Amino acid sequence: MKGSDVTVSSVSKSFGDFRALKDINLEIRKGEFFSLLGPSGCGKTTLLRVIAGFEDADSGSVSIDEVDVSGLPPDKRHCNTVFQSYALFPHLTVYENVAFSLRIKKMPNRLIKELVTRHLAMVQLEEHADKKPSQLSGGQKQRVAIARALINEPSVLLLDEPLSALDAKLRQHMLMELDAIHDKVGITFIYVTHDQQEALSVSDRIAVMNAGVVLQVGSPQQIYENPASEFVARFIGETNILQGKILTREGSLNTIDADGFGAILIDDETKVVVGDDVVATIRPEKIRISNDRPSGAELNVLHGIVEEPVYSGFQTKYIVRTDTGAKVIIFRQHANWSEGIPDIEWKDEVFLSFSARDMVIVGKSA
Image (tube, rainbow, N blue to C red):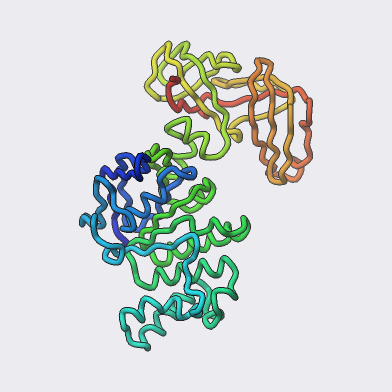
């Protein structure tokens, strides 16, 4: 497999009194599409710049294929970076922008032409080779930047929010193209984003960061289905948060007295004991909404009134106020044509049901 392993060991970085990174440890595998995900100011771009060599860590080290590259300049690390701002030379054509680094290396013109042509074909820009950046769309400029980064044959490609300047539809299109390019070249991609859907869509694994700390590393499925903390649960998509005290525990089946919900069953192997105050979560799509009371083993059932239905084509989002005062978000997918006809409307009395197995304990209450 192409690409390189990247190991970040105990990396910390401060700017004056502000600690941007706090003892970061990561192991990124060869050929992986790895995302650094978190809100603005969480330290993800600083970490990327430390890996690239644009910033020096105050402590700790960065290794590429088990070789410590701490202190080496960016051009000695076999990494290339794609920036949010494209950073293209406005006076050069697309061809010359991509060829620039090869000309610096004084490669023969024949080899330059062969490599530039191949990389422009990879990003589907062969017909735009003679244009200047000002004649290109945002998506085309970003593809030029990617081709220019890849032509140096780096073992690691670093991408710093490369799609954030694009509109939503183009961003989705470019994301799929970026994933396809990764599949073609097979090198290690380290991708910085604050967009949860971007990270979930293309990543092999994700590191969720906040306040300079890595909170969880895992596959998109692990991060979404089994968040390690309340912050991760809230940050990755919408969710419902419950707080309460463990009343009973038999094996992995817990009963909690949840604020605003009453007694709730949770099937979760997190190590808790009777009397612990815990925080739990359930995703809106895991909750069923109906006009009739459901029944079943280990099923939680709530009754309430629809405060607001929000129709968005492929699904309806319901906000329901339960009899016990809790506000619950439910997503109802419209898998069939008939399900697009709303049989549950504003002010309707409804029953909500969800399995104990779909609940996740994400931590203990402070």
